[in-house]
Image (cartoon, rainbow, N blue to C red; front, side, top):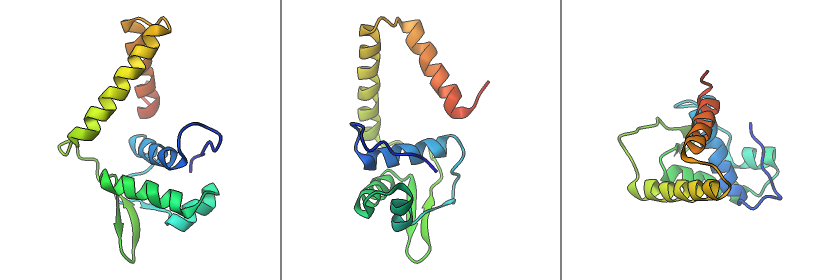
Length: 127
């Protein structure tokens, strides 16, 4: 499904969140697709079930997934009309920090935009 970098700086639960979101954006995980149970995913990734549980809780809070008792955990439909303003604000701050860092590395505005477009094409598999 995806890999986790246990030696990286980013917490494992955040890596799980990011991977599930990326698979959704790429169309690999679609609305109503069933996700592995917490124990199953923990076994696949060889991480603590509490770590997967924390990731799933955050994904539910963000309305990316939904858990139905007795049935499992499923991907939710992506609704652009339901924008979490606080989450958007935090994301835009991260983007600002990245743009500042790239500028300090010598990237100009056009190069930054080009790199963002390349990343978007990679995610969406555009030509």
